[in-house]
Image (tube, rainbow, N blue to C red; front, side):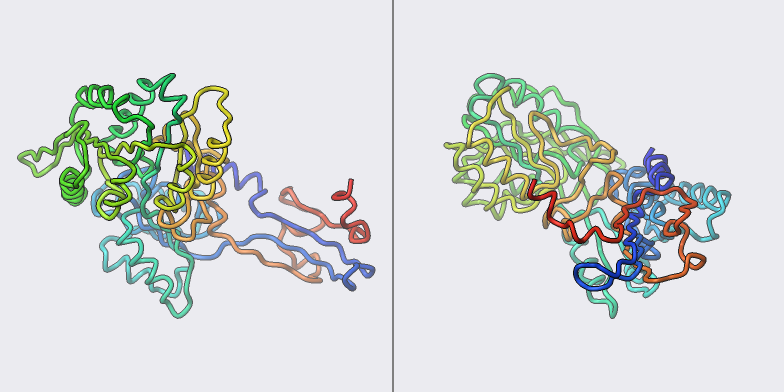
Length: 428
């Protein structure tokens, strides 16, 4: 689906962002030459594949699709969790690209951490993407920045995706919120970068029973691999042992005879004061079915809580009563828009629509840079750079910049004489 979406993007041509400024001897800032600008591919892209989505964020995923759409060749460093699948899918895609007329080697797959780091240092690589842990992502980002010629590194590193429930919503639909919360945390054993890691409520006791009941009905689900399972088990132990934590659903981690781990949800409650004091233990992301319910006293305090404790996330959400429009709610949404890539109202963040308006990226530490998205059509802009052609003869211009526009792409046109009326629209 993502490949088809980006195929339509390429066919439309708007992503090229073609701009043509007609030569203007009377330009207000001095004579203007003929200027024609378009976006071009940055060059070969290295994609470090994710573990939890062998298709959506691996060899054929959004990073690969958007880089190919930009016109870049792609080297995928396969994830060790599904190497054979990566090999098979890589071969299928490579054959398809060549059959469509792409140069041989447009898509290649490599294996191993050493090979991935070596490729990241290769001067032919012009941009890199990554989905994984904060530690590994930060290490790779530092490698990309330390190159003799640094390159952009688009890493998706970690997010706890806080959700906030207004007092009015809790009183008018607390049970629905609690069951939806457990379902979102438990989905695929919490192995989503968009899993809600925190739920803020004004009355913990009002949802504790429903949360416990809903969690008890969730069957065990296998964790993706031993490394993820071991990390989750340690994180769970630390949270359960933290002072001031109330266990709502203890959950479990079971190891089978093949060395695989199976988990059920672990949900705990704390006061906001405890979260503030025990933040070094409680605030980190838990990749698995663990989440924390936090009891707050005043909705007026929540924007400051977001600013202080949750500076960068993929998502942030609010559950409010229908028609609720308080100053406190507006302030909370405003703060979440500053710290999150996607802001939700009365919804859960798990499940990312692959669609033009999607933003899947947020301020650090959710992503490096925090400016791009790895899902949706705007993901292509990460692998493009602008080039302006000045006074270039028609026969030598790229097709999208020629007067006859043989590709039929959308274009922005600035005619001569336009500068004399600048500002007139703003004053009307």
